[in-house]
Amino acid sequence: MISQNNKNNKCFSKEYWKYSKYLMTMDIVEETRDWRLKHIRGFDNYMRDHGISTKNLSAINIYNYMESIKNLKPRTRENRAICIRKYIDYLYENHKTKISGKQVLPKIVHNSYSTTPSHYDDEEVINIIKSVDKDDNLSKRDYAILLIFISYGIRLKDLINLSYENIKWNDNKIIIRQKKDNEINEFPLTEEIRYAILDYLKNERFKIKLPYIFLTNAGRKISPGACYNIVNKYFKKANIKIGTKHHGPHSLRHSLATSLLDDGNGITDISGVLGHNQIETTMIYTRINFKELKKISLEVPTWKN
Image (cartoon, helix red, strand yellow):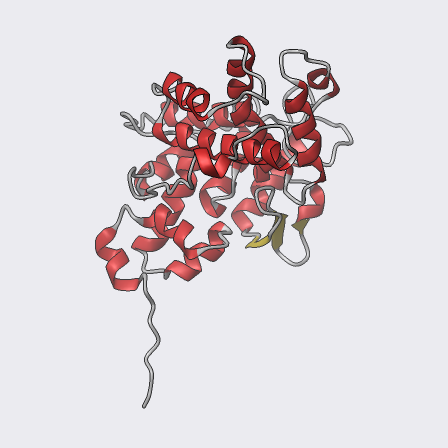
């Protein structure tokens, strides 16, 4: 969400702020709005620094900007191009520029199979859990957080927004409305996770009336950065060989997908657990095991004549 302080920030053009207000009227989730704005800020600053107005914006200006960010990761450049294209289309439709985003930046097809997602095997994941010292400060919170990430593979934003109303104690369920796509996903409340959450709530959680389950030691809602640091802390304590692999909450999500695939679960089942709307997204998570993927990914029904 765009804060009032940011709205008063004069570093961005008036067209940028008009676009931000326009995005607020669209039927898209907050995360998507923030993602779009994040990727056009650099372009907006580039236009200001080079004396480029929307009226005289040209394709060469856009290509020069894309050249200026060539050192960014390929996926970041692709995301930026996608968001800039949408922004320029908005300007074009509102008669602020003579070129459209579609003309200058044709639709980008990202090769989802160009990189391999980071994942860790079952033994490494178990060692992460074992590395939690129950006598440490906030160890009960950290233990519950790790268990939820490892068992459910939920996204970071869904974890930090987990609240009392999401936990159906009598029905043994955790029901989450995903921040990314607003879809509802349901998980079984296992005895292990039930005990871990209750242990934290009763014996360690800051006594304050906030709806969120996980708080900082100052009684505030836990942040994405703090949550990432928690996971990273126990990767180090468990002496996991990280190398060049990612080692945050999302790597635990990948690890769960891989483990489910190794256990013979079908792609549709894994997709349901991860809360994916499209099977293709799940295929990205599970491509690390091509041998098993060939066996079960298609799940073609047998037809009778």
